[in-house]
Image (tube, rainbow, N blue to C red; front, side, top):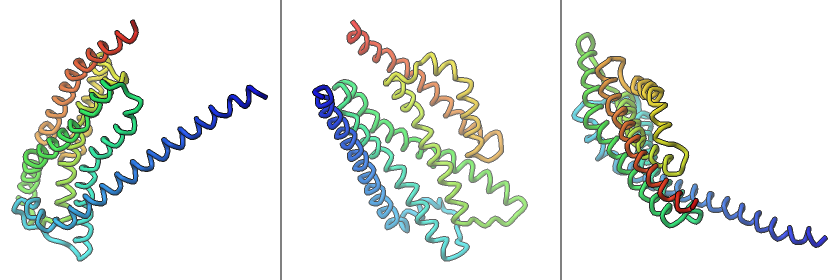
Length: 250
């Protein structure tokens, strides 16, 4: 009877801890949803001013009144989602921080701005380099035989595909380093699966580009370079982790 009564406080404490974690996760999701809503409304309000910049001088037409709503909400939602990702990462870091050592906490926090910078770099690369080249290529190809009419839906779907996708793909080295720092990956493992990673990146580049060799190479080359950069950074992260682990073992 006494042994059972001694176990009860432990069970109650365990249930309270699980409830606290659930409450904190719910708070993170609510704040992230709130942040997303703010970003969404902000982009929605300023979309008429942003539209000329995104159009790049092309005359874009709408096929119906509902296209305006679909276009505004689609673009605003995509941009808001991209900016919410770093915010969510910061909230997750705050959630796991109590279980980390001061060094691990400091190192993990650096990934939040790194992910943001990588995402914005990918967006810039897609918008200023990949998208103009691909879109001009397709327009020249179509204008040789047809009168091309650019609809808002098709234009911005292509724009978002060739920019947002690259924004997320440019985060690849940061993800590789993070997984190495927590012991889920090693540089040796990343080198072993290099050829499979290249095949996967080639498939991705084929999906987000027109079916021509030049466009796919234009996207695939930086993706392969990012993977190699991830391996180099993974080596550095692995060595640092070994130094942290070895004193703890001894």
